[in-house]
Amino acid sequence: MSKRAYNFNAGPAALPLEVLERAQAEFVEFQGTGMSIMEMSHRGAVYESVHNEAQERVLKLLGNPSGYKVLFLQGGASTQFATIPMNLLESGKKAGYVMTGSWASKAAKEAKLIGDVYTAASTEGDKFTRMPSPSEIDVQENSAYVHITSNETIEGTQFAEYPDTGSVPLIADLSSDIFCRPLDIEKFGLIYAGAQKNLGPSGVTLVVAREELLAREAKNIPTVFRYDTHLSNNSLYNTPPSFSIYMVNQTLRWLEEQGGLEGIGAKNEAKAKLLYDAIDGSGGFYRGVAQEGSRSLMNVTFRLGSEDLEKAFAKESEQLGFVGLKGHRSVGGLRASIYNAVPRASIEALVDFMGDFAKRNG
Image (cartoon, rainbow, N blue to C red; front, side, top):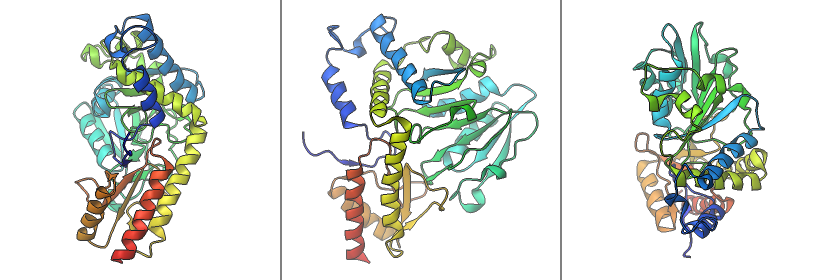
């Protein structure tokens, strides 16, 4: 195999090499069945065992909480932006959205098409360079739920501490930081995440929620968008993205081997510190975008003194095998997405390049 790229893509993102190698070994024939897992019926016992094992691994990583169920759905987090209010924002109630950047704004926009939405907090006045403190979040009476985006990939911000919304269910989009650190699931009524950053390849979306939320009847919406449909059918109402779920199961197995959420959390803290230290120690050549206290462990955003310098940085980095370091087109700058599967060696190589580039251009 040729040298693997230093993959800092924001998503689809890096997968653990061990997971790719295991999948490669089982790709043509899965466990002596004479066929790939992609070729077999999702109603058969062989596939269902993989499906169920992945659900069990999700709950095990979360400490096997009582009363929570796992769904594997399709359509990405963007579909959940609409599915959540369709199922949970009942007539006569309202939903609070915490506005922290691009993805929170998209979630709120979809919810406004369904029902009554209010802004529970916003950091737009700070150009979304920070997350609000829990005390800033206003949970209004008669709220069906409060929605947060745990990690904003574009701005490079992340909640360091989640709010307590009392009896009002807290719902979180964890697409870009799911399982990057320990998670107290009991703070949440529902969490969801597209797989393509920390869980596996694109094509499957994870939902973990209190069973009573998923079991609510919502007969006025299409069957396939009802949570109770998928709950009662074990996420097998329609043909699931079987290979993506197989890959999620392999990635969850890999997470177990890293020491679970505590183990991977410690590794992610160390990786992020290495990169933020390089930014902060550059004498101003590199400038972090997110405010301290809200800096993301997953998406490190930074700027240089000019757009020309940023373009030169991106061009040179690509020539050396670094992938995905350009910032999002809506904000510019630079961004290194250092998800669970990005090895420390890639961050070390990036830090070395950053030091050399600053020396030559400072």
